[in-house]
Amino acid sequence: MQIPQNGEKITMNGTAISVPDRPVIPFIRGDGTGPDIWRAAVRVLDAAVAAAYGGQRRLRWMEVYAGEAAFRKFDNWLPDETIEAIREYRVAIKGPLTTPVGGGIRSLNVAIRQILDLYVCQRPVRWFEGVPSPVRDPGAVDMVIFRENTEDIYAGAEFEEGQEDTARFLALLKEHFPQRHAKIRFPDSSGIGLKPVSREGTRRLVRAALDYAVAQQRRSVTLVHKGNIMKYTEGAFRNWAYDLAENEYGGRFYTWRQWDRAKERKGEAAANAQQKAALDGGAILMKDAIADIALQQVLTRAHSFDVIATTNLNGDYLSDALAAQVGGIGIAPGGNINSDTGHAVFEATHGTAPKYADKDMVNPGSLILSGEMMLRHLGWNEAAQAIIEAMNAVIGQRAVTYDFHRLMDNATKVKCSEFADRLIASMQA
Image 1 (cartoon, rainbow, N blue to C red):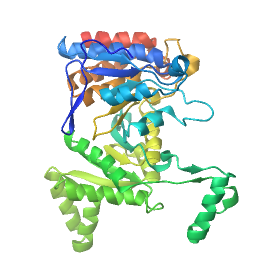
Image 2: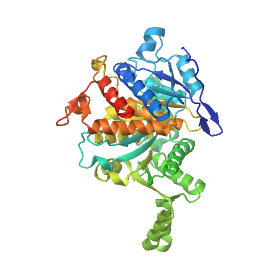
Image 3: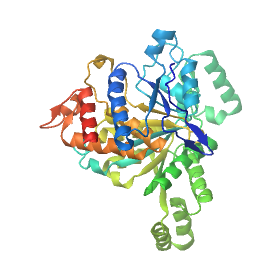
Image 4: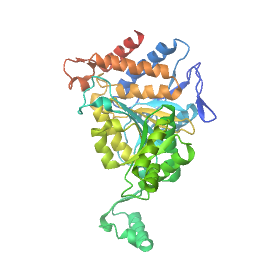
């Protein structure tokens, strides 16, 4: 690593990060199309900071390695030095990474999240006017997903079919929990996965979502779960989340569970009146939705959703389904955050697309908008807003990369680098 001159570390000041005017930001170019989109993104991010603050503030970039580039240089897909650099400098950004084929690390992205305990996967989803969409009213989509990042099936607690340890686990289950073992229809040929959902993991994820909703003055928080079937994992997620809002936020939220209690005591009209009074008084509505219904309603009733807090697998489905409504995963940003330590890694959410590597043609929007998220995480909202306005302007002019061009009429196809040029020109203007 080459530590940039005149750069300073981001530190913690109590429960918040303290950001100097020249923070050192570790970056990973990524694999496949990663270098293409990084070259575009870094120019846009630097231009946004310059447009917002002149020379008063500047990002100081420090390259670190993971994925194929790391393997070629160091024979290691994820060097310890990379993790330690992100840990030391707190905030990083990365392009897409290849998952190694064969044994070892199941996913480099998941490994980084788990090693640094980045328990929040934050995915804002919004539509830019002119972007092609399969739905009638994509402008109704303006949501922020808070997806739990470290538990659920992504914890990786699995037993492979036919292995000795699987047989031992099933024997243990049969001996000590025969009723649960009896629910497995074909135990001798089953793979088994454990699904941990903890009170601590739930509370810290939901607290991040609630704090965001308060700080950004959002309308509602929806808990998406499958608690009607998985009562002691996803059902518990719902209950623990409601407990947190009702017990620790002093009336800032009005929950559907409060409405249910009021209805049981005084009737539906009284419950409705209570909810209206709370919302008129500035409270944020907190509700819940079964996962399968939520996946339908984000299509048919997108305006009903604002902030979403959910478990890992549900969040995975929802994020990509919503991205499809606003232009696809090529323009979907993401951030992985530990709200307690201030550590955060912002990333392109799509794959490496190696067949398009070094062709200067793919859409850099996902990484650019992940950088926009990073700027807001730093508190540099003016620079972040400059990017949003430039995206609106350039896409509104129908100057787009090939993925959007093939879906739009009367559009101008531009290269990855040319899209960045247009964004920079818009900000400078």
